[in-house]
Length: 222
Ligand code: IYR
Image (cartoon, rainbow, N blue to C red; front, side, top):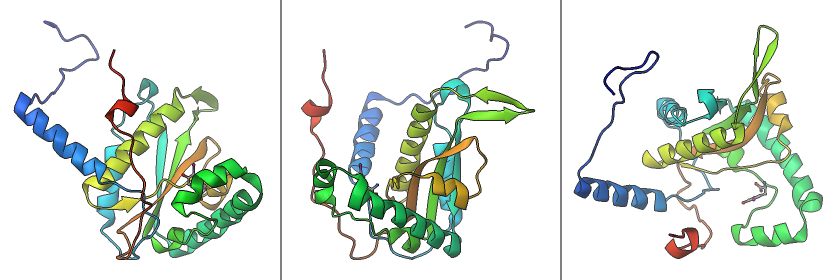
């Protein structure tokens, strides 16, 4: 384009050689293939700036009309982590003992999960992601667009950023999650989306012996 239109700037873009693209694609796939959801955490602390950088990376995600409808709440207070654990376990006990149908419980058998959520106290940080459905601006409600898609993409990038720096996490979904708004005193336009403990794995951490789908199962070329 000869003239940059009003309100636009030139794109900054890094073009790689074919060979470098291939190498980078393989390296990134290898890095992400080794990611596992971890339920056994070490209580070892780490520099919070690492987590802040991962959140800033997550916040580069594309979003509907660039509304960036997310808020990442980093919990490091042991008292608040404990409060979250107690409330999450209360909901999960109800889920496992009454709310989840047998077919769901059967699907979860391979993961060895139950209502106990010790990782919520052990991991040095719990990150609670909230979605912002609308903005309250001088009394008027401004609706956001594609909020679930946007926040989902952002959390995916957060998980990739953590993997890139050697931290582990779990996408935990205590349900219902309203207790998080109460404990974390969030405004009414924010709703809890996901909860992720973050840390280093316990030295004896185990993970389920499960496999990822192969090339021909996850894609079709037409
Ligand atoms: N939220 C419950 C149950 C659970 C649901 C799914 I889908 C999982 O992949 C694992 C667990 C829990 O966190 O235990």
